[in-house]
Image (cartoon, rainbow, N blue to C red):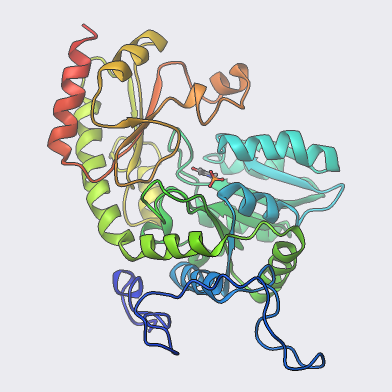
Length: 383
Ligand SMILES: *Cc1c(COP(=O)(O)O)cnc(C)c1O
């Protein structure tokens, strides 16, 4: 199976049909508990928090797609990320990319600190800054590339090398690109994390998180934490993510094509101050990005003059839904300062370049021509 290209693997894997009935859709196993024939030898399943066949199908699928040894499904992206942080103990330290997802920022600053786990935020485009931030008690370097919402690019191999030299683990939030475009484990990352709420499921209809471990040592620790903390994904939602996965390649391909066209359009628009999209040759991380990823992805950000311009533009644009989230069949426009990054204090936001004029666009499956025409009419209301 592993000879297949990614696109084929999405459909033809060991779960392409149910071995018992031949069903071409994975059965949803609702049972919370499983009958045991005697108490000395339990069967493959005993209790659904510890293991469930529907969840296992999804976990096996994501592990294969990311090239890891084992996958884990959680109730949300934050449940996956928070469970991963439970690998740390009191007195440990984590180095985190400075434009990290707002919810991860909140977990690190407001929760982990209460358990005596320290952190340092750094600009991860700067390997020297990362090296300087590493302390004797640093246990994890946490990456997001491209990052949210400024699409900054981190040199994955560079960070992995630093981590290995300092005996720490690397985590990478791969939500924006998915394994269709970037497979961090191939570059030595220890744990890949996902909000499967976004591109992996792809239809704005399920909240889910995934983790994939590079080796058995970390896999067994994550398994123990998943079972202890218990934030597992429900079986209906596992099935929805599995269905979404089947079309991941075609969805991303189409959305990415649209994102590139829109980025080019915005890049020359007089009312747009900045466009952040790694697919643009002028993006500072462009060459690093294309060493580790096969496409620019479907998310971009752009900066207008100020909050008033954003208000006017977003009130007049018609096609995208204006919402938190990304990675769906419909285009989603969001305002990071008051949405995904609302948990971040204004001075932290401004320091990171998340200004009051910034909008983020996740391109869906609409015709890019329609989107550009729509943007054009919304911009005309600004002048
Ligand atoms: C949405 C998101 C998360 C959080 O995932 P949830 O499923 O909303 O809990 C984490 N990281 C990134 C990059 C995200 O976009």
